[in-house]
Length: 273
Image 1 (cartoon, rainbow, N blue to C red):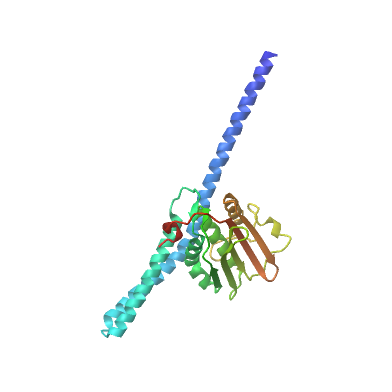
Image 2: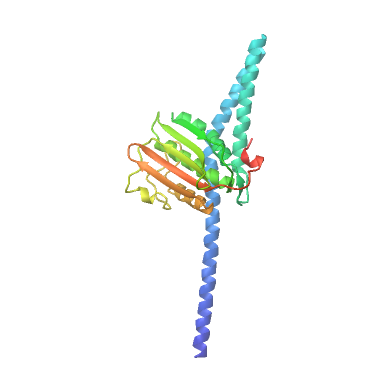
């Protein structure tokens, strides 16, 4: 009886060790997947921002040559102003990329959601122009939210890219940010006027590896089925809510609600520049 009892204890201990090892491996895999998704989001923007930055450099170069050729004050003033405008935009683009690439510790802190949205729109502006999708933006001054800035920006970029992909040429994507005084929440809405999502599919869109796309589109984005599930995980981790409303033939809206913070966001978090 004692030998049997001893054997049971040893087997139980072995199972506990195996279970602990499995849990550790799962946590490591989750961390690796999160890093991979973060790098994938940053990588998706590399081509877009490279083209944008190159166009700005060409603008600066051409107007510098124009200023050297023309001696009259009016032409030189025009050249200087265009150079200043392009340089200012280049600084903002660079600041937005660096802010997204910054290796933060993932802790939640008072964060300016409006600043994250503006940075994301800046990074994706060229892509929307390329596919002739009009952006309508209405961002109110809202309280800060307790958030990991990098994680929330990944959500914003993912939803904006999805909206662009779902919108036909000449279509429109609307981005709005406002406060809900009744619930004490900050509300972000991203709406497109694309073809919409089939009602039979709608309940599954946040499932891991589920996708309605056959693969990446011409821009190389989409089709993996991990984007929306990752968005939901991030919003859940922020004690927020994300929901989707869609009508076939009219479009889709993703609505995010996050608790407002009682603290103000630091200036460095509010805007990367």
